[in-house]
Length: 203
Ligand code: SF4
Image (tube, rainbow, N blue to C red; front, side, top):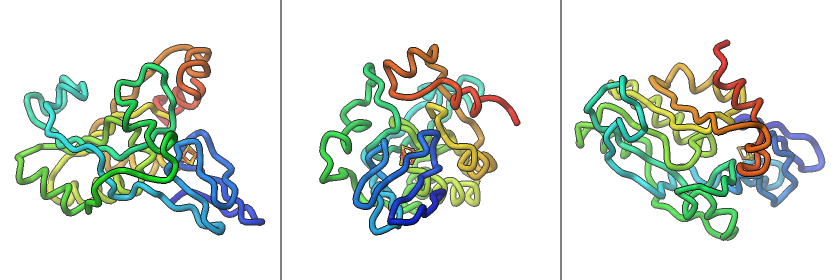
């Protein structure tokens, strides 16, 4: 989703604010989207690396379905490279092990059924940046709403504008980190501040 073909086999990914120009057989900054002969593939669709039942207060949300549990999922990869990342092993894995994407193949139906069976009121897309597994999060979120389950993004806010518009109607809560100054974003996260503010700012 959300890329364009540029000719000569190059593609431009517009999923997040890095807007990567990706040459054939190369990956974007997140290291989980690869250009194969002019088609941009997500390498993490359904490749769940982490799945837990967490209290919603761990997201941390204190006024949203309080005292409920949230089925929390992630794939490997991230569009940030924060030097202090507490989930470094999974967020930076694809960048450091370029030939493999770890995880267990899972369907949106399995995720939503797991939430229902475990009496979770919501599904949280968290631990790594959910934007980089956008297609899977989108499919899960759509199905979750059909089944009466809420959706929560725990995000760095580097989601591109089009992606925000697509996912917003399916989200019931979105916790976006505002980490610091532009200098901090550049030096510590490998990103910029302004796109994060743009995501937070109401349209
Ligand atoms: S999701 Fe972001 S980091 Fe990954 S390829 Fe697309 S624009 Fe680049």
